[in-house]
Image (tube, rainbow, N blue to C red):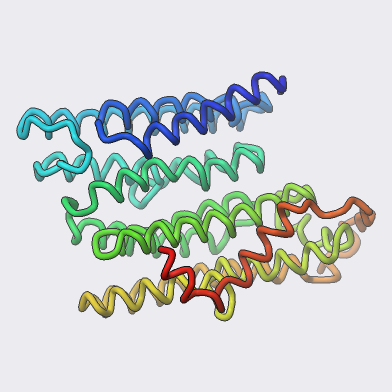
Length: 346
């Protein structure tokens, strides 16, 4: 892609995100979401492969529908209350429509069907943007409207997302689809706590974004898209594969890695809110995702592929590891000991 075009799209992405997260008026928030959608579409379809065009079309249709619902919810609320302020969302119908719209924007169950397909059709770098930056504006809107939303509805959506994200990722062989279902599962954890402690949702999102960025950038460095090619990729940069193993286990939420911190705090907060059954259920459902993370981790560090005849060993590259990956990996693995300091900042 032309460097000038890439610069314009990247600037538009930053502009759209900034407008949405800093606005108080619904129309400005909607404008930011639209700028974001239009900026990411050329990045999804830049390979001109039929699957990429299909992914861009699916993404456009779902995001356009979700944006229309956001506009409809805000107009209904303004009609009944005379308020266009995001934090003044008080009308029950508007709250319901907005929850559906943001669930569609994020890819929460039952509006999740577009996300794995879009991620599968996109390049790894665009997939990283879709999984992290594109999720920030909708989560910010949820954060700002969280006092008015229905706790029951969000808890149901969250538990369904954790269940389906774990369950549907079990039999996947494409890594991008596995990461898409992992994203859906993590969004379930964020949605369940947003009413009770919105700051925990943001902390979870930041840590999830860092860990996912590490995984996507590592896969992009070793040029791997499928589990079968991941098995032979260890010969390229063995040290990077070892760090990918730790990052995947951190994404799964195993102690003593960074990914354990948000899950531990969310379970603690749910127990304080007398929602022990929901905490137990979502914890058990995260075991499903743990299975496919372990499968990925196994394929990452396996030193001989099972079907040796079908695979050619890769050449080891002397290319130095990117400093960004090094920093992100360190953060993705080692933040748990300084969790008291993180909590004082948050």
